[in-house]
Image 1 (tube, rainbow, N blue to C red):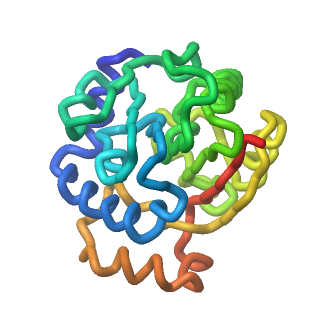
Image 2 (cartoon, rainbow, N blue to C red):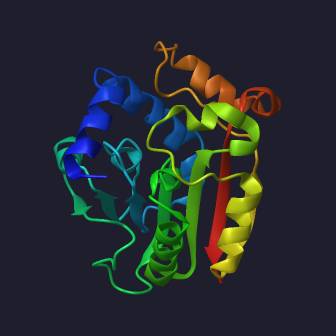
Length: 219
């Protein structure tokens, strides 16, 4: 996919939703994801989009990686932007990062080989004990609607994702098959209090969750 295609897809899907998405992610980070991140950590947001996650993270050092050149315009000050193909070698020292986070990204890579190479770079860049936080659409829960996005190439379920991580020498500490709904695009804006409520009502995840969430550790 060309750089211009990536920019066009972002504009098509997210134009007009930027502030709303940032508010949603502020809740997700503070109420859920922050439990894995310490103030002294070094954190990379992989396939960061417009930086909704990394903008809301409190950490010592923050990086964001994406192909979209417009990403930098949306990042908060102090975040280092790396614009590159994530399957190519990273300009990051080995064993430097505490956390790599990725959301709804791996399914967009062109093929499984690119995904494997990317995970190898993740593993190399993490410190021993460092963690990959991985959120993504679960094909087991979505069935045909998984393919409703033109640039979805790699089908992943919570089981296949966990198996791949183990093959790449990660230890899977947490695997939630059904976590968040699959509704951040092509929807009307919903009241933000519902996001906080949903995170508290774990029983609701089973009924409405369409995305898996995995925490994998470099041993």
